Length: 70
Picture 1 (cartoon, rainbow, N blue to C red):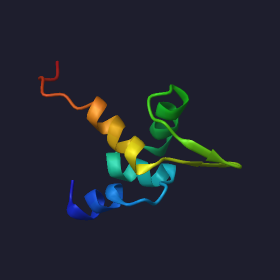
Picture 2 (cartoon, rainbow, N blue to C red):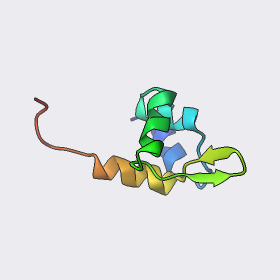
Picture 3 (cartoon, rainbow, N blue to C red):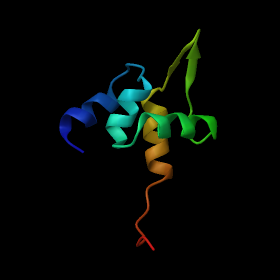
Picture 4 (cartoon, rainbow, N blue to C red):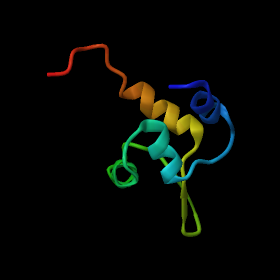
């Protein structure tokens, strides 16, 4: 991950789903799927859905693996 993206995660700004998708290099639809499944915590403000940077960092850490993919 480049330093721009790392600094973005470290900020206090709440992240939109497309921003999370960009940071994780996945689709926006998959971000929403992770939220629906309870794997990625989010905040709902009215109709807006946002992700706290700390919750994104926690998701990344929980899903980090040092094992080989099969």
